[in-house]
Amino acid sequence: MNTYYSLGNGKRLEIFMWDDFFENDIWRGTADVVILDGPIYGGERSKEFKKTLFKDENGIYILWDDDKIYLNDFDYDSVEVMASRLAECVEKNDRWLVSDDEIIATLIKDTENVGLVADMPVFDMVAASLGFGFLGEHEQTVLCVPTERQYSKHSWKYKFTLECECESLRKYIPSRHVYASDFCDMLKEGHAKLVVKNEFKARLDKYIKMKEAEQKGKFFKVKKFFGMVEEMKNPYTEVLMEG
Image: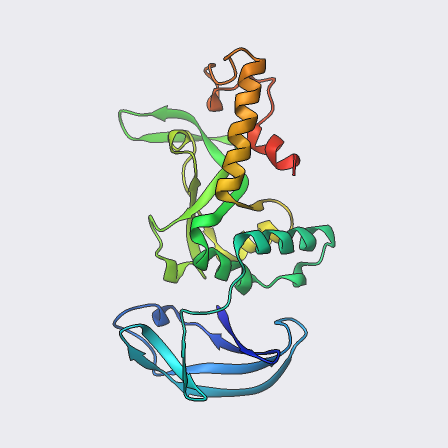
């Protein structure tokens, strides 16, 4: 993963980030550094060199004009900004408008706001007493969130785990391990959508209450997964389409 650090005057530093840059006790002695003029894509790579790494109580850093630049303090877009950029990427069918590194930077730095509306596999049968289920062939669109349940954040540039945001649905929907590159492709190609988690949940709750009122409380009172009658549409998809 390449991380980026703004220097002002349109210049940025690009540093290749090894996994162990995030670790407390193991780290490399030098960093590969590039000066970028302009944007990540289309900018001029004007100089490449190595910088010595130092470490203090705040983390690992390099010195730049006598200033400390901590490797963990890299640039990132908020989920809201990144979602807008990805929408433009999908609309223009131009995957190069956003780099994979920028997407993962948002995932790592703005985790609490990350929501992903995506298709997830569903258990056809759940053996609750035994603690496992049997996957079927169909999927459901739900709101997912990244979790450190199996992969810590320093590994997210390579692989991480998505789980259903709604805890009560997790017994029907297993977590899913995804490679960072596949995750970025899903977003850039429009197969999944990045959303601000709590904003989307508020819209979802409003939609469900409206539908429950229309159905006189029957909306979530059937045996099928999601507690929805078969003829009803998936609320996650409906809220997403509302914009």
